[in-house]
Structure formats: C-alpha cells, structure tokens
Image (cartoon, rainbow, N blue to C red; front, side, top):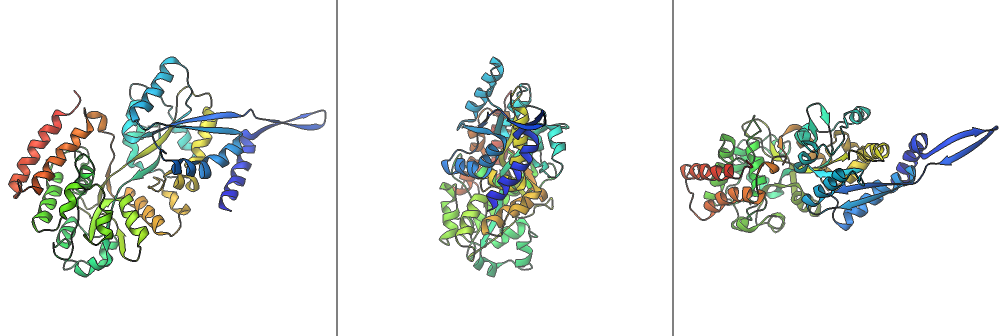
Length: 431
C-alpha cells in the first residue's frame, strides 16, 4: 500500500514537469509522451544483490514509471575503477554517466582540480524542506558550494546485556546510561573484569583505528588532527583507557583476532561494547529483550565521539540528462526513499525519522541520526592524504599488539609507543 501511494504521488508530480507535453490544435487536445531516456548511475555503493533489489523496488521503480525512463546502475567494487571510469568519460568528452554515488573519502578526487561534478547549491535551495547533516561538509562541500548530497553513514554506538546494569559503578544509573549521560571514565569503571567485560576490534588492518578513533574524538574540541593521529592528548586519553581495561582483565582475549564482536555479545562472553552500529543492530534485533542500546560515552569535550563513513550522490558535469538527474536526487533524498537508500545504515537527514517505525532496527537508526547531530564526528576524507591506508591502520595495530603481548604495561611505555607510531604515521603522508 505504501509503495502504491508513493507511486501515485510521484506520478502526479511528474506529469506536471516531465511526463508529457500537452498541446491544443483546432479545438482538440493532443498529448505527446516525452521521449524515453536512460539515466545512468555509476556507484561505489549498492554492491550486493539484495541491495540492488531494494533500490529497484523502493527507489527506482516508481521514478522510472513516473518519468518514462530506465535507470541503469553500474556498480564498481574498487574505488579507483570508478574514478578511472569518470575520468575517461570527462577526458574523452564522451559523457555516459549522469549521477555518481561516491564514498566520502573519494569525493575530493571529483571536486578538487578535476572539476568532474556540478555545483548543486541551487538544488539544495530548492529542497528547503529537508535538513542534511553538516557532519559531511568537509567531503561534500567546498566553501558555500555543495557538490554531493549525503545519503548514508555508519557510526559507533554502545550496547550492553541487561544483566550488566546490575554492576553499574557507584553513582551511575541506568537512566543516565540510556540517555547517553555517562562518560568514558564511567565506561572503564563499569568494565570491572569480573562481572563485566568488553572487547576491542583488534584484528590487524581492520577496525581498531575507527573504534579508538571514536573514543579519542570524544575528548577533543579540535577535531582536525585527532584522527588518525596517535599522540594528541585526546588520543593518549583513549589509549590509556584501553590499557587500564586490559590490565584489570576487562578486555576479552579474542580481541586480538576479531573485527566483529557480535558473537561475543550473543554468547555472553562480553557484556558491554562500544562498536560499529551494524554489529549493534545484529545483536539487538536478534534479541531485543536481552540487550539495551545507547549512545557512546561522552569524553572530556562533553560530547560522544564517532568515526563516520558513507556515501553521497552528485551529478556529472556534461550530463545530457541533468534535468532528470536533479529530479532523481530530489526523489531519492526525500525521507521515504532515503531510509531505503541508506540500506540499513543511518540516513544523514533529520526528517528521515518521520519515515521510520518502531522496530529494533529502526530504533538503532533513529539513535544514529541523533548521534551525528550531537557528537564529535569525523569522516574519512583524509584517506587520500596518505600513501597507503592499510599502513596507516598498521600504526594503531602495533600499539594494541604491544598492549596484548605485555610490551606495554605502564602509561609511560604507552606514550613512548604512541610517539614512535605517530612518527611512522607522518612518514606515510603524501609529499
């Protein structure tokens, strides 16, 4: 029923703009149908079959019918391959792609120097009925000009087994925690090593850089330089918390080899975690009566912190279907559609909450929307500043490995290691 209603609404809108042209000849009305067009979207997102099906069912179908067009979605699993495709089209002046869905870390390649996407500031003005998060502006915007609209993001939240609330540190209430009114000091004290343990996403070259990066962001008012840095005051504080929890037996030993701790939560091996929202969603939606989900802890800045990633959509310069591409962005970023465009992650649109229900999965998405508007957040737009992102991850991996193998047992040893790895990190910067 919802899908039919959406189709009816967009059909009425389309008929007034692009559906058909009506003329009167000798007292009689004749209708000329607009020529059928193909709208090509090149994307580094929507890779799985079920994701493509969701886009077709909830976003493409109604738009295609209303606008007498076919949407062709070309997906590229490698970011470089997508850029090479667009670069080739631009340099040959043979523009095939109309719309581009790019990762936040890759947008710089299309905006700065190359000038491959259109300035869409006027389109944003037309969409005054919606509020896009400004957390992504460093990737999507340049000054007062917008080139991409954010469509999804993922972030970090906290989750605890209901039994863990029996062991809250003195002075901390369950109500405080669920409202997000608790700190990293509270979190560390909650992890007592006996009744409550946690885990770190410590598998090499995977997630630890993002997990601890979010911790560090909560401790700073100057976000730039905090991530992927290692030896700022904010980062030292985050790593000190990791060391303290480890020394009292509060970090599960499997942390050395995992990039997903949902299994440890589900089998009761750990009772508390600050982790990626996809893992939180998996655990909570499977057993909502056994777990509670809440925002990440606040740090010395008075805010929570989280690393964010995701994608945005823009229009390729030289597109023959620019008018249709603009209409598509309007359609895709409206609340009812953007919740599907986000594919289970967080739609960076304040009004998207109106299109969500009250399922456990929806509740997590609502919490994510609230988090990006109230926390210290940092995207991954700095990735092109380094020669090899895997090596950047390795700097954080080395610190965690040294904690686990006993090389680091004191704060002084920790700080020395952070200085060493910061130097290694600096050496990876593009000259």
